[in-house]
Image 1 (cartoon, rainbow, N blue to C red):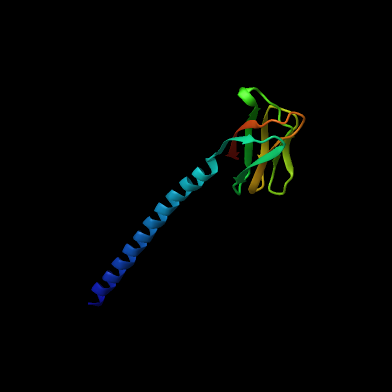
Image 2: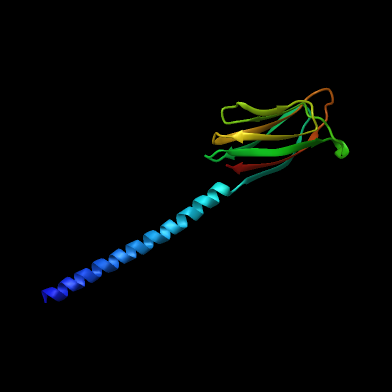
Length: 145
């Protein structure tokens, strides 16, 4: 009787051990895929908007907690689709440090390293002698390192 009880206990312990080992292996197999997807996913920022004469418009982007590159372009047009200069473009990080800027242009491009997580903001300024509304197109992408 003692021998059969010991064999039964041994069989249960081995079965539980195998089940734990298999479940741990499945979790380990899933974990690298999830983290790989997270590190290779880029984020697109596509916005179109109008800026009234004498106004400033902003577009924000929340950078994840990992470094990467934020690159893209913007274009401003006036009435009838003609290029129309903005008085300023500025891109800031969460601490309001300027990452890129341009003055007096109807289009521009940027490519900056992003190392801080949090809200990055694009500012578009429509001030100057010609008081007319502008239409702005922003096309950008954040790509993690």
